[in-house]
Image (cartoon, rainbow, N blue to C red; front, side):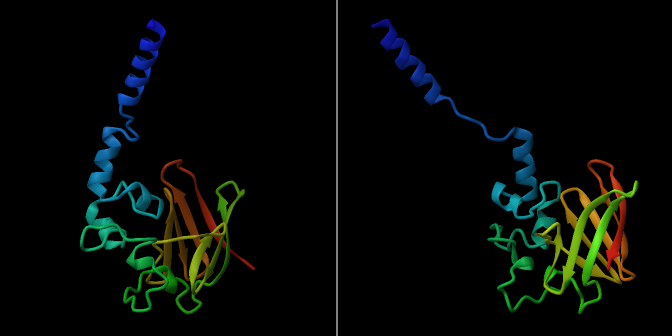
Length: 170
């Protein structure tokens, strides 16, 4: 009898406790940025403000999360009037081509492919690509990649401190 009561008590206690998936600090980041766990996977940045994420299309004007990549990055939206999205990243072929990312010690780090329809880092399509004044910039995690119109550039990873050069591969 005691074993049954003990088993019921253990099952009751285990099922009554709540599991917290995120810490209070992480929850505060989600609230400040306006992101959800799903939108974070689609590019919403927890370290940025609600306004920044809204400007970059991860939150619409109603405060709701955008589906898929957000309004700036939705390829099916033929009426998209924004000019800073990835669909014009090549700027009529200005940056189009293949590039090699190298560490400062000369070691190969990654491959970049740019075409008019997008920018790809090791085959992964990049979002939030900006082209302005002969410079193309995009981010992947904490790494920022910058390519100038002379087909050379640089990159820096703020998290690890790594950095290096970007060269056009012919």
